[in-house]
Structures are given as C-alpha cells and as structure tokens.
Length: 337
Image (tube, rainbow, N blue to C red; front, side):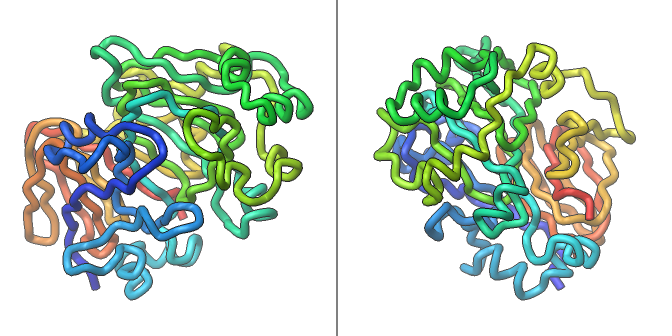
C-alpha cells in the first residue's frame, strides 16, 4: 500500500491559448513555450479526446494506473465505494497569457445523459495574481435572460463581443475565491493567475472560438442543438454573483490552523482548505499546493520538507499528518464520500 506523499514536477500539456509564465515563476521551472497555460496537478484526468494531461509519477507510471492498482490505498475504502477509482477532482494552476474565450461546462445530469460520465464540471478559482498586482477581470453568467435563439445566433456568428457585453464583469484580486457552477457561462481576462479546482473531466463547450482555435470539438461532438441545453441562460444578479465569491478574510477557521476556501455550494463537488502551522490533517487523498513559505509535513514517523511553489499528492494510506513551519498550503480534497 502506498503510504507516503509524492512531490510532483510540472505537468503542462500544450494548449490553444497562451500563458504559463506565471506558473514558471511560481514553480521555478520555465515552460518550454508560451502555450503551456495550465499545470494539471496530480491528474488522473486526460484531455477530451486524447491522453494528454495525465500525471506521471516517479518511476514512469501514471497516477491513474497507480490508483487502479491500489484504489483503497490511494483513495480510501469509503471513497472507492462512492466514487470508484476516480479521485473525484482535478486541480490546475492556470495562467492566462490572453483572455480565455467564453465557454461553459456541463452539469452532472447533462454529462450523465449525454457524455457517459457521473461527473460534470463545476469548478472554482483561488486567485493568486492579477495584472500589475492590482486587479483582474473575469466574466460570470449573463446580466439578463438570454434565450436559446439569441445564444445560437451568437455562436453561429462567433460574436464574442456580444457575449461578453451580455455577461457580468467581475473584478478579482489575489486571495479571492470564486465558485463557478456547471452551466454558468464564464471567461477569464488576460494576466490572471489562479488555482482551479474542478470535477475530474475536460468537458468544455466553447461558445466562442474565433481568434482562439479552429473550433474542433467546441460542441463536445454532440451537435449544437443538443449541447446548448447545458447552458444556463438565466440572468444572474449582482447578489447571485456575490454569493459565489469569498474575499480574503471572510472565512474563519474551521479548526486550528485551517480555513475553508470556497462557499459551501462547492462541497458536493470538491473541498479545499487553507492550512498553516500546526494544522492537523486527517487521512485522505489530497492534492497540496504550497502557496507561501517553507515547512514540513509530518506523518507516519517521517517528515517531507515543503516550500513555496511545490505541489504534492497525498494518498489515503499516508494516514494523518501535521503541518509545521511558516507556511501556507492549499489542500484540495474530493467531495466527501
């Protein structure tokens, strides 16, 4: 049984949009080119229609294969009974060298009915940095109801300007935590560096692709008459958007040294906590991103040194552990079984 955490190198598959420089600075390992905007951390999920994105562990085996060989050791028996051999989440570092196109992700119900998956793609962001350290821009949901005919027209004409104009612009700053429910149209502005935690799929409906890509698989190979059913065209008010966002300091400690990150609506899909010195961590499959400082993770009679920019995967079999040092760690967890 696997019983120790594993430090992970960068895992940045080539993508259609530019970015990755901030990931390189954070990780201390520059990307090979400017089209590496995402680092898929501890990923047992592959890109839609391919194999890219899978994490390769020391020794050459993929994390997916390692979990399949010992699911209880990696994920824990209760998790396996509920979610099978999937870790139940995907974690990314994401750095937008250019604005992301307007897109949307399907819900679990849509994914079950049309994509053969128990997981959709609700996601959430923890903002790490923004242009010039000041503020960044994202767009979330429509400002007024958008009917299917108008949406289909925007997609047909590839009218990205109209899509953005119809959405809610939101200012984000470092430390902001944003929940993006499945079905919600969204886009991320250029220069925003964030951690994204999501359900473990690569299902993206690209409402906008002109100027970004050739539009291949923009409709997830389902056809637009079907795939537009996954888009929530209802208006989102300022109050609706505010409920999706937590600003730094708004969440108190859940236990000594630990604070929750996103609004409670994230919990059925994934969990995350900010952990610091003295935090006691239960046995669980977890993905760690060291945000700041240095310290160590102590458990099972051993200590793993940690420093800012590192990422690690912790198997259930590693048991309980504690954090020590002047350190801040984002601990990402699957939904509770």
